[in-house]
Image 1 (spheres, helix red, strand yellow):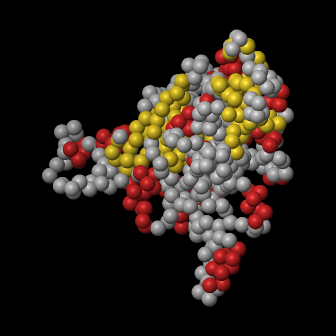
Image 2 (cartoon, one colour):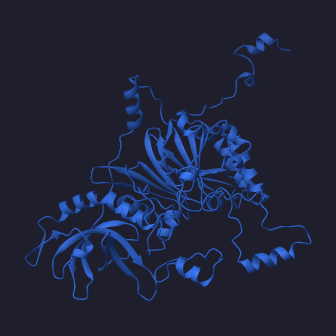
Image 3 (cartoon, one colour):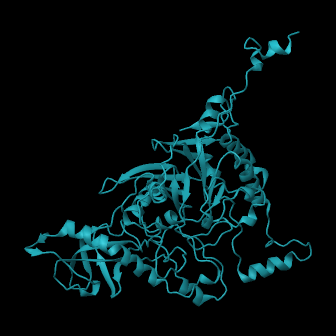
Length: 508
């Protein structure tokens, strides 16, 4: 029998060698609080929503005027030179001119809350519509500003613009009072901050030496977990946890998992609850359950507890940024505020301190939707997907990744709010306007995975990522924060027909 000394020697058995345990790369993270609403009594809902559109127009007018001037100064048509008109109601018949305004789409199938309220005072949520576009071809497009509205016509206008986007339109007024558009301009991408710009500025003010930064890891983005609390989706959910923790498959995949430095959960973590019942259905259902003691409106915490356990098991090894979504227990109107910490009895011990403490965010950061922040020096902007879903109802034959590009070039992350997308009635500001161009822009809960890199007039580059629902696709998106390469990893069980083997993580 070997002595303990011989077992400690290099010539000992292979079992004496320590197991390889890859270490997780750190995450440099600095959240912004662009979309946080006022607290308590400072949050008001008495304002008119129209002020939000006028504020958006005011913020983007200068950029539109500059873009239109560069494009149309000196432009002539039929011997007439184009000129700018300050207000939409100052357009005169037969004059070649251009004007800046906010688009308003009058669509036949668009919901109208005033009509709903006139029919019934206590109503359920309206059924979702696949599209707002009328099949009869009666939809109209208008351009508005503080002075009024001007009906506009022109080829392909309806497939390129939606309510709430601000544009400059070049054309002439016809005899029937409509403005026939021959060309348009949008604001395009705004200024893009340099990598580490905000951190370097803070260090310069503090007169500190620039810290040495290690190689950046990968950002994992998942959305649409749609946890129900039942055993139906536990297998794929547990495999996701094992993959992110580096416990799935063998050392090669575990080493790759250790490169993931942060996880972003982009909305719809919990499955959608039951729809709001009408008054008659609610009373009838309540009367039918009085005898058995079961109340269908009673809150069930099983799904939230399952999410809490998932976060608590992952947080000791990986920081998490958590966005709410349309099916999560958060306010419905955008911007959705962070999920309440009382939902997370286990994981809230890892929650980040309040924003005013200025401490680094290394644990659970429950944020707003939309949300923006700096990760490894890159500006990242993301949503839970409602903005893309609503905008797709205005246009036909357009992909979600194309809609995301539209919003970036319009400099508005939610142009259809507050018209058809519920939104807080901002009075003096519109945070939905994109002030600084992000490096990464993602939208969660999409039907398919897609990626695209777009370029702006000043060589800005934005990586667009459409993140699919995990509950449907079992997919996680990985973004390399050094090279900006994007990888799709499927986490689940697939059985081959012949050999019956199982795959856990399949990169695509």
